[in-house]
Image (cartoon, rainbow, N blue to C red):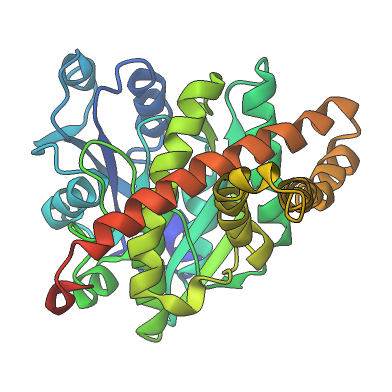
Length: 344
C-alpha cells in the first residue's frame, strides 16, 4: 500500500490545512470558487474550509450553505479583519487563503505545501489563471501580473493573499493581518503586502511558486478597474509609512511602477503652466515622461503573448497612473489628519 501523500512529501501528518475565504457580496463567483476547493477536501492535506461572510447583503450566504463549508459571520470590517476571523477560527497549523473570486487549480495547494516542508519558510504564495479570456481589459491585467510573476525569484519579500499559505504560528507571532492602517472596510486595502513585509522582517522566509495557480475573475470594465486602482493608491500611503524601505519597490514592483502616480499628479498640478510661454513645455514633457514609463512593460507583454493587441496596455496603464495618483493624494491628506502620536 502506498504511503499517504502528506508523508510521501515529507510533511508531517499533523500538518493539516484549513482554507479561509473572505467574501462580501460574492454571489457571482463564490459558487465556482467553492466547487473548486470542495474537490480538494479530504484529499491530501486540506481538512476544512471556512468562509468569512464580511457583511454580505446579497445571497452569498445561501450559496455557501450548499457546500461543506463552515460560515463565520464578519462585521463588514474589511478583508484583513475577515481573514483574521477565519484563521483564528481554524483548527489546523497551516492556513491557506484564497479570495472569493478565485478558482483553485487541483494542484494549487500541494505546490505551496512543498515549500513549507522547509521549517524556515513561514509562507508560500502562488500565481493567477485568467477566468475572463474574452475581455481585453482582463487579459491586459492578467498578462501584466504574469509577466511580473515570471520575473519574481523563489525567495521574496512580498506575497499577495489571493493564493497564499502561512503557518498559523507565524500569523500568531505577527498578530495576523492589520485591521486599521492598511485594511479597507468593504474593499481591498494593502493588508496582504503589510503582512508579508512584517513576516519577512520577523525573520521568516517567504517563497513564491508560479506553478500554484488560482483562476481569477479580473475586472472587465475600465471605470470599475480605475476606481479599484484609486483605492489601491489610497492605502499605499499608510503601507509605505509603515514600511518606508518598500516605497521604491519590492519583489513584485519596481521604482518605475511606484514613480508613475507622482508623475501623473505633477502633470495635473502643472496644467496652469501652459498659460505662460516660459513654462508651457512642462506639461508636454511630463506627459512624454509618463508615456515613456509605459514602454518597457508594454513591449514585454507584446513579446510575451505574441499579440499586437497588447499595445493597448500603454494607454490603460497611463490612465491607471492618474487613478492611483488621485488615491495617493487622498491617502496623503488622510494621513496628515492623524495626530503624530498615532501615525503607524
